[in-house]
Length: 84
Length: 182
Image 1: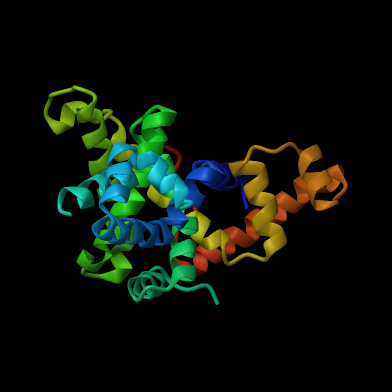
Image 2: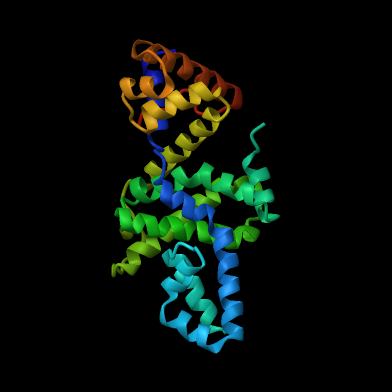
């Protein structure tokens, strides 16, 4: 195996460094996060005061369920409340 | 046995949480690299695009017609999401003007890099670890030696032997055994 083969393989391995750990973890938690959103929406449908609190502060509502309030999840929750 | 891309996608669609974890783990570097190297997004924008892409993957996986074509579908989805992000920053221009001029070349190189990383997954763990630490994580011989409890003087020869194994694997699978220099 030539030095040039080594260099090329090394360059291709180096082209994909790990994504930041927190980003990967947040993406892995998506299914659980969506279940959490379903629960928030269900609770809000049954409890008007809770609904008001959630609408006033979506980030805190997600955080209270242990969900990282990433922009896509905040958008998702916002959209779900538009249709509630 | 490492599941194929298609098997993993099928399991995700069936609601298998472990498969989803593995899918994200396997493709997180690819999506990150497209955002940061292909489109040179800031760390903040890259993070938003990264989460957005995996959210779309999760919700739209049933739209994928061929499970074995997941990687090109993901690349296209990431590319479109990067462009949307640049547009949301106020830039109104044709797509060709929003994308870096060398984006096709970079994406093609990253695709080749994914093939190499997939072959690496078939290597023994010690080889996989040492190659990833040295090349992808840019660790020094000293750091690798300490982490893996190896004499630093043996690291270079181990890397060389592991690269040879990797090349043999790539030749078996028809991957880029002798990647072109770009």
